[in-house]
Length: 179
Ligand SMILES: Nc1nc2c(ncn2[C@@H]2O[C@H](COP(=O)(O)OP(=O)(O)OP(=O)(O)O)[C@@H](O)[C@H]2O)c(=O)[nH]1
Ligand SMILES: [Mg+2]
View 1 (cartoon, rainbow, N blue to C red):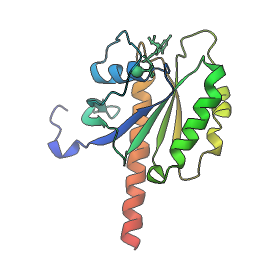
View 2 (view 1 turned 90 degrees about the horizontal axis):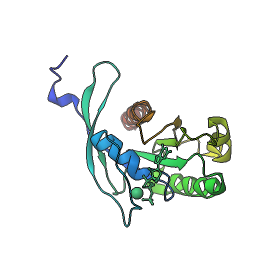
View 3 (view 1 turned 120 degrees about the vertical axis):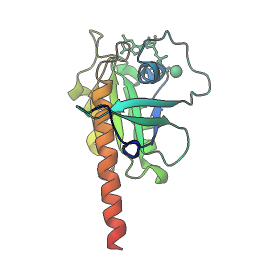
View 4 (view 1 turned 30 degrees about the vertical axis):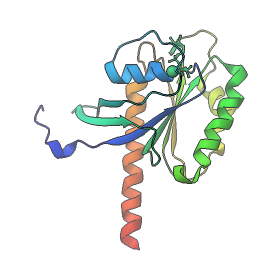
């Protein structure tokens, strides 16, 4: 159905975070242009407005905004699956971010990137080393295996993030009504 009413499209503020060299810029360009770019280390930060399609069958176009502002609707946390030396550091950062007052309850898509490399950690190893089970009960999360250079896993991950955001919005709406 090509005739999607305009009111169906919604904007989301998504921040992409992660240690240097995790693949954030690669993920961003995959989402932005659906193509691979040869990256250089990012100085400062990228701020881009991107539009990607979400929704399994209907492929509704929903703008997805990456923003560095507070009040993000969702966080994409990119982790290098082969960098076992710095996974502890990634874990610390992830837990720090989700504990911030303004991020309470904000859904997190943890991207286990570079799964194409032979020596990458398994999902189970990533989950335990990042101590995802120890994240606050309020923080919904999903661990998504991905290969950002070819874009594998990103669409699936985005759809999971989208579902978590919509679920949270619904819960917040219901809580408001009760008050
Ligand atoms: N093999 C493989 N390499 C990847 C993948 N994703 C990113 N890379 C490579 O990893 C390197 C770092 O990627 P970037 O996207 O620049 O990482 P970044 O997180 O933006 O890094 P900073 O800007 O330094 O913070 C680049 O050489 C990418 O080509 C992947 O899925 N598989
Ligand atoms: Mg970068």
